[in-house]
Amino acid sequence: MEPMESARRSKYKEPIQHGNAFFPFSIHETDIRLREGKTFHTFFMNGEKIGGLMGAEQEAPLYFHCHRELELFWVCKGTVRIGIENEEIQVSEGDVLLIRPDRIHGSNDCLKEDLIYRTILFSYDFVGSMENDVIRQNYIDPLFSAVTGPYIFLSSKQQSSEWLFHLLNDAYCVYENSGRGFELLLKARILEFFYEVVKNGNILQNPEQTNARMALFMKKINHYISENFSDRIELNDAARYVSMSKGYFCRYFKLAFHMTFHEYLTNIRLREAENLVRTTHLGMEEIAIRTGFSNSNYFTVSFKKHYHMIPTKYRNISRL
Image 1 (cartoon, rainbow, N blue to C red):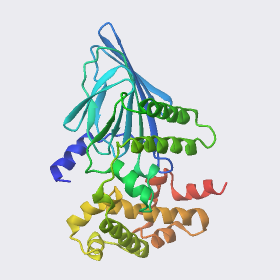
Image 2 (cartoon, helix red, strand yellow; image 1 turned 60 degrees about the vertical axis):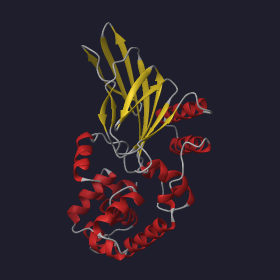
Image 3 (cartoon, helix red, strand yellow; image 1 turned 90 degrees about the horizontal axis):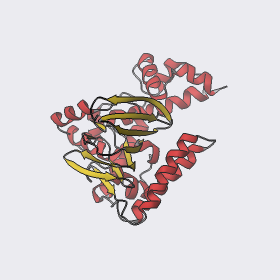
Image 4 (cartoon, rainbow, N blue to C red; image 1 turned 90 degrees about the vertical axis):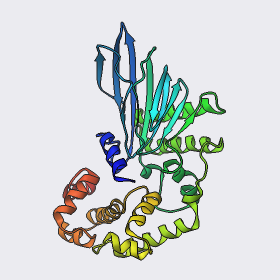
């Protein structure tokens, strides 16, 4: 991504965390009512009312923003025009938009009727896997691909649209109710939604992401990281290992793994560190050294950012 384009997206980056490292998933609902020239917004996040907004005039239905999660956006009542990158599309009751990660989207539409819309957001980790299998290659990667367009529009007039709409609302309610084991049912509903979309030809396999060269690249770099994560790994060393320039390696890695090399390496180290924190009595400094962190302070900060608590607290809770 060019520096100017990267800066542009940073400007619109949404300052909201969607889920957490253990469950990278969240739901939102916006209820907009028009009364006597005023706009009444009510917002719900993860089933909880988080506030409202009353505009002296019409307020924009959705501020422009972007985030690294994939978004499923559907209208339960009314009609709204949504801008995605340089395109604009009208979304009405029963329509569904699949908005790919890091795409700037929002709406300044002047509404003529009440509007209720819902969104589901989740990261690649929620449906993807570390294995480059046929499911990932043919179905999951194209959903998050940066080279297959900013969105997929599923019209209410299309075949099986009613069932797709039902699946999304059912997934939304499953999250709201949060009964025992709801995470399993929720993931099943999302995967069933994607199955219906694939079955009807709305998601096409992307040859660039599924060719043998990329599969070999992913296999080689995974082997390199698994063998060396406990040591100091430089970006140039990784690029040299797969015979690529540093710049091309960064772009290719992001296309293959949907994150930067540094993010991926840190995730691998944290996954190994989490196992050592939970299953051993090793001190945090020793765990930091074994998993490639430069010092225990940096390890603690990284661990807390990923798991939302310091490693010593995580160890105590995991052994209750």
